[in-house]
Amino acid sequence: MSTPKVVVVMGVAGTGKTTIGPLLAARLGVPYAEGDDFHPPANIAKMSAGTPLTDDDRWPWLDAIGSWAHGRAGLGGVVSCSALKRSYRDRLRAEAPGVVFVHLAGDRALIEDRMSHRQGHFMPTALLDSQFGTLQPLQEDEAGVAVDVSGSPEEITARAAKALAELP
Image 1 (cartoon, rainbow, N blue to C red):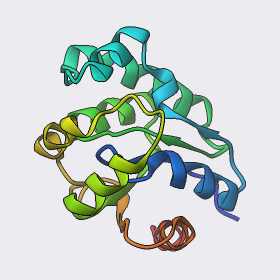
Image 2: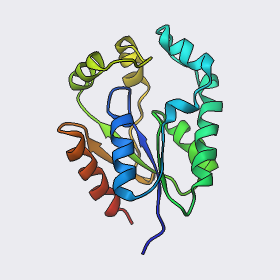
Image 3: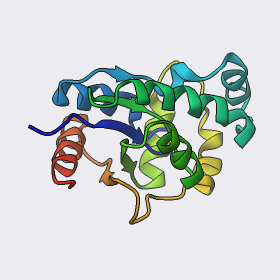
Image 4: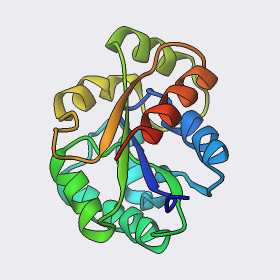
């Protein structure tokens, strides 16, 4: 049996990281951590006010997620994290070299529609353009897979699990 992976479920706001992450963790039999819980209160206040985070805002958040992932090395786990830029993913890999990424990717109109219907989340749809502008999809040398977010959460989770199982 292979060593359980630590998986970072990534993508722009509204792709379903908080929905797919726990489903994927349950399917893989590993713990789940909600990336938003690693944000300091100042970051949440900024985003709630419609202000995009700067890289300086993100570094401590990414370090906290990376530390969690490092602690799960060899044990497996799933954590959600937007990880939009290559430099953010590099920062996570510096803390936890074995992480793999599941990039939840989809059409902007679908994602905006989903965001407009969710309740109680601090991220406004006004920041979606900023998110897409920042997004740098996974590159060939990065361990991970892109998964289309159309369909039900169960269908997306099944596609993600299948794609992960096919990784070397």
